[in-house]
Image (cartoon, rainbow, N blue to C red):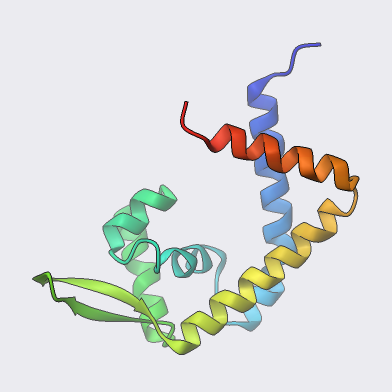
Length: 137
């Protein structure tokens, strides 16, 4: 039996969408829209808006809007980059860290509910497969 890569991609995207949809209420309670959450979650790994755009495959103009919103909500602040005084880097505030952590916990709980449908052995195998797919060729 042949497995179609496009079908697997689609199933994975649907699963992620279902999990995100299930967490929309929790994100809204935190004052976050879905894409704002993704930007917020990426700030520590990619502290510059252009890096965030690249990492999340979002247009730079969209990231600018999300960053502006996150700054206005008090989740992120801009700081002058000591290495290049012309650049600003993004830093999570305490409120931003708390919102990010609570949102991640909500996502993890929903994903865990989905994982509970498969056996522990299958979960271990899924983790192994995903890690293999992410490793350099």
